[in-house]
Length: 122
Image 1 (spheres, rainbow, N blue to C red):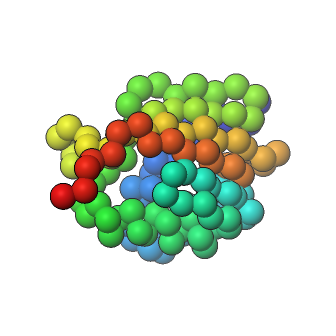
Image 2: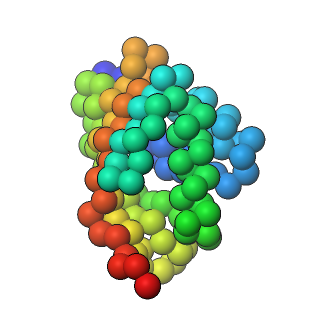
């Protein structure tokens, strides 16, 4: 088994990192070089494209943080968890669920994301 519930914490740490150099270091640590990430708003491949996607989320939701909405579940090379995105200490306007698959080195190589709650456009 290469996927662990703790991997969800590292995953969200990468998504929460606002310093570009520190974020790239986390992405290199957590994600495979050929990572693919797909959700309703993005479909990207490679660490650089994932980094750009994370940066775009920071621009869209400045000051928001990702946090686990409950325990992560892992078995074999698969990990699933639900997350909240919102201001620290406040109700999250965005909720989603991700399923990740790891490679032989324990890095995430595939992410399938789902948006469960998204704010209405103003």
